[in-house]
Image 1 (cartoon, rainbow, N blue to C red):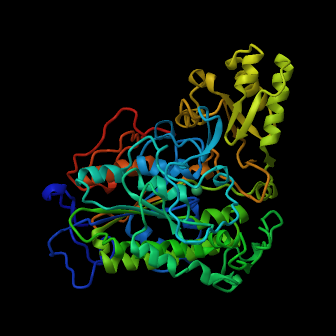
Image 2 (cartoon, rainbow, N blue to C red):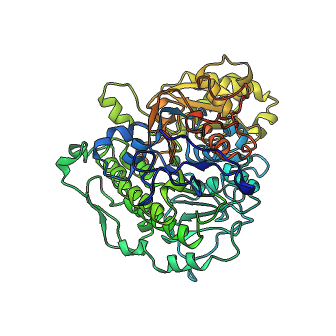
Image 3 (spheres, protein in one colour):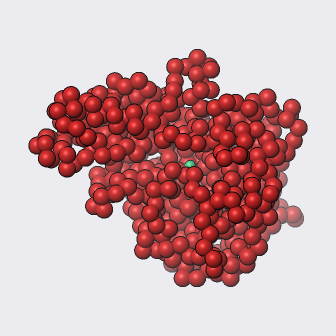
Length: 587
Ligand SMILES: [Zn+2]
């Protein structure tokens, strides 16, 4: 394996890579040979697949084609044992950790939704009325919202204001004196906004219109290329269509598992193939596209347009592009991760990815691109599926938790209604009620937590006031890393493994636990000079941003706690971080 050359390159201190041929890294452009001069990395492509539990890549390994997931795994350094270290494995929490290398206790994104004590209401993580959505059309369009977290948002304004740490992209902008370009695209607003950081530009798919949108935080008006892309109305071309299997059912691992009674039939979308999208005008139409491979295809098409229009990877300052694909997660929520729909959406994403990578090769060169693939969280099987395997598991709902908490406080203190509300994973207590009754809040927390811990399906409920003194178990450590002083709730509720804990509704499977199926994600680094190999050591997605910083000699994001992964760092890199409280220990 040829080694990387590390050279100070002009103002950017760019890392220069020995050029690659067929034998190393991704295939380089034709005519390139090992003797060509080294080339700088011009594009950092961070690919995140929402909800891609780590084992799904090995489950479907022999079903992938050329140039997609298999190429990344064959040619990259693969971390086979990567786990999040925080307890609340939700989308915003995972994306913010990927972007900042920090824990939620520091980056502040402790959940998709939290209670803002100042405002006295629940807030959606990236909601910001100061920066309204930039309209893409003259007429208003409003679709139905099936994302329970997003439904909590009261305004359409979006910004990264609540993200309390800098991201790798932010630091890259500082390092290059603003000459790097930092962009982020996703099927989901929160995934796009977190990865763009504070200084980058974010675009996301609108389930209202099928357009890719942004907010006034990023732009006063859309660039022309965005206006033209949206004018094509690519999403609407699927009106009246349906999601069909791309191959004969007998060729699928899960071909005989299409119809399971606990999958969701989302208002006529059916539990079995084909899944009809309905038509433009149906409030659910653009959402249903996201619950199919079309969401990922549109995301990749928009990313390709962005690469060309914004000229990514064309000059010496390395640019950063985050592409976060959302359809695997959406499909998992309604059909589960061991459904025929999951196999179809992941294998179709493999083709979308192959197409995107070929495009990047043509426009930037894969030999000039550093790729990192990961996910924001994993996914549990549906409880009914695990019950069939013999586990005693079921579903827990917020109302059950609130009722139990209220009954416990009523018994102990004779006071009614101490719970204000529950938004997974936190129970929030009613301060007024507690104050009026002259009770100590810590005492109430304790009684409620003790009672909830005894509830069927609850592994442990932890009172915030008791957190500092609890025994340092793996789960308690993960809860601590999830605890932000003003945002976290009063009692953290952890369900038993494979128990469902979320609102009643169309969601068939829900991630968010601290258990291994929710913390396990792939981490793969690919670039010329990065050796194809598999590392089985325990590593963490929080290591990714510090690794990128070390790779480029850029200072680390402000609150990063992860450790640079030395296997992918160029020889001679001196950017190792030796903080004592790194992530090398158990999680
Ligand atoms: Zn997610």
